Amino acid sequence: MKLKHKINHGWQRPSEEVTDSYQREIDASLRKAEKAWRKAQKAAERAERMARQKASPETIAARDEARLLVLQRLDDLRQIEELMRTPTHAPTSAVHRTGRQDRLEVGTYVKPKRKRQPKAPVKSRRKP
Image (tube, rainbow, N blue to C red; front, side):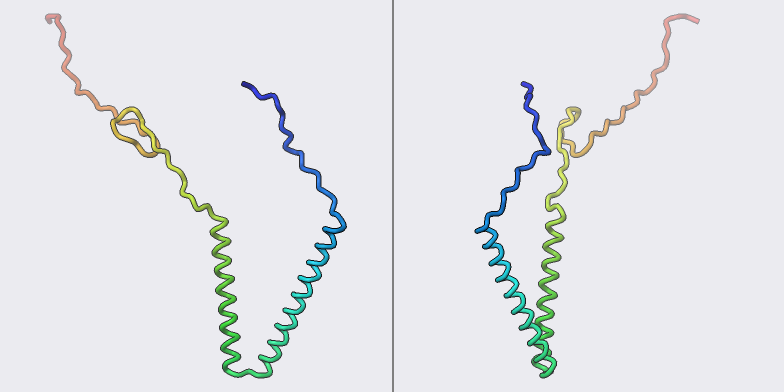
């Protein structure tokens, strides 16, 4: 049966207009995220100033440990991204019966070599 329905692959669903209430929610969440980011930046700057003022061995050790943890986390994220990029399944290999032997052949079929038959001496019935 032949299908005569032509699919339009270039068609895209028309985008809906953003309503005012949805835009207000977006703006509120954006303001909240920006405020949290500014607060975190100020806390980081304050911590750096205090670490410079009080360069005690405990502070230096804590800072180095925090940096090491951050680097380990970034390395973990890079490994996860690499796993997401590479395929995790092995390439499939064809297993099929060739029909010429009684065992299964794996891979491509190679035609068996022909055995040579020994040449027999020529016999004639004529008398010389």
